[in-house]
Image 1 (cartoon, rainbow, N blue to C red):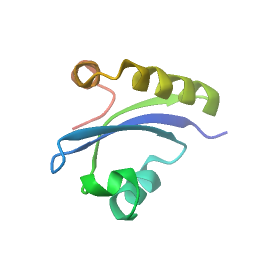
Image 2: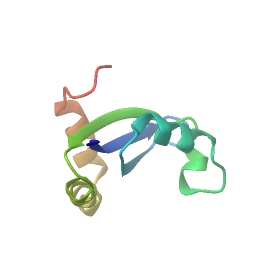
Image 3: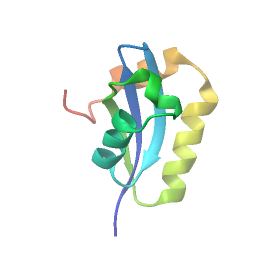
Length: 88
């Protein structure tokens, strides 16, 4: 059984965040940093700044959508600063 993740990436070059979900964070980060023509290509390089682990895809998608619904940079930055889930 694989885990699913909600992740937040940050681009210092574009000064923006990207929220997504996946079952393979390393693969997904690599894709964001090399695939052209997508939303994230203007932010290369991206770095992982936050992640949450879920037992299934539906829970991860639900959490991803709840973060995106906030439409708030401050909410995302507060979430990251309160988190100790990702070693820096």
